[in-house]
Amino acid sequence: MTDTPTRSERPSVRSLPLASALRLSRPSDTWFKPALSVVAASAVPHLTLVAIGRPDLVMYTMAGSLCALYGHGLPYARRARAVAGVVLGMTASLAVALVTASLTGSTAVLIAVGALLAAAQKVLCDATRIGPPGHVIFTFVSSAALFAPQRPEQIPGHLALTLGAGAFAWLVALAPALVRREGPERRAVARALTAAAECAADPGPRTRNAAAAAVHAAWQCLLASGRPTPVRRSLERLVVHAEGAFAAPCPGGGGAAGPDRLRAWAALTRARGPVPAPPPAPGTADELYGIDAERAALRAPEGRRAARRALLCRLGPGSPLLPVAVRTLAGCALAGYLCAALGVGRPYWAIVTAASLYQANITLSWNRTLQRTLGNLLGVLVFAAVLPVSRISPLALVCCCLFFSFAAEALITRNYWLGSVAVTPMALLVLEFGGAHPAGELIGDRVLDTVLGAVAGFLAATLVTNRRAAGRVERALDATGRARADAERTGADPGAAPEARDRARRTLTASLVELREAGDTAAGEWWQRALPEQRLLAAERAGHRTLAATAQRRGPGGATPPAVHAPSIGAE
Image (cartoon, rainbow, N blue to C red):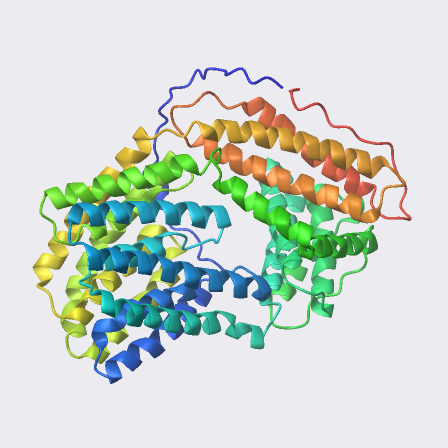
């Protein structure tokens, strides 16, 4: 495998989409979960503060309440740890902001600290893969706190409010476990079955990659879900069928179920009734033995140490996240200082706007720039319309904030710009808890901050190059080649332990998912050498052929056909 750079015949600067960035998509199948959670987590502390006559403290309880937005795709065992980490991270970010605000009134220092916090929050959220809404909520809270008047003796009480609201948000996030403790696992398996059905009905690179990602996500969810239960055992058997269907999407390939049956199982799995009990697929007993062995290995001290090492690698000097962190730091600082130079009273809005733009590559960041700008500009019009209603009473203000919190989560999965239409008035209404502000000033500042933040943020994204994206593709190709060789070797060895065969196959699936993600990320970057597109395509084809071969050879009683070796990764 050569490391010699190949220059692209295409221009380094690729065209940027317009209409596709604003197109609406189907809402997420779980949009209502974060929407209801954030309303429930916010209503109790907000109403309590209004009842005791201290609505000016809502900003601090809101910091904790917003933690209820995280972790909704995780099984409850992992969600408990993840949301607890979010609460502690939110409190730590707020503590840094409040201490800084209490020690200095220098706008230059406050903007610098805000940009540093935004970059650190971006890297940590991406490295831990906490999922949406990612670092934006952290940046919104810490940046706003930097520019709020603060005295040192007030800080412990304000942080206590955040921790208390965060603890309540943790309870809200875990409350559904009392009703349906395997809910996240059921949804993950249903998605895997649906994706496998699409692949079985229409085999192709797109459907195969989508099915591989969904099956991999389902296995990861089941591995993190805790001790096996009868429901989880049934879900594991369903994933075996889904894996067989996408690995060998042909009639009878590997004993795979047909598309119609897979879709029927997906509907029953997603519903509230009992999980369907599928007939045993070839190799099911070995697969379940392997998943138990892998679960035990992950829970062992060595497995936990390996997970920590992987996290440190994602945060290390060679991390592909470093260019995005530099972009975030430069863009937020530039946006803040530009707004301060123009005399804007609240430069933290520009910092938050710039921080929200940074995605995996420039093309996605451009999409987010369009979406954020359009959504914020429409959102200020909505704010102007509802402001008179919110000023009727503190209770009306709380109700308006809760409504827009729900609307933001309900709409944002359709498209980010649509959710921003609701986020903007909610962010502006929060200022009203500390006292009424001139509407024209709020609207003018927000419009100016949005435009300046978007321009400065995207400018930083174009100037700070990310040449590590191509290196990530090279590493993913190497990892996929090793995983494919290991899967072929263990699959063809009759003496290999069942857990070794299944672990090798799942490792190959994970490497194919990482390869596709790395390729998609690099394809949207500027200023880099040409992608090895033919090698990417060949590696994906070889990996999926190996998966198909190992799926057909699974099962202690099944016939073992001759080993099917895919072409080398460098071949066309």
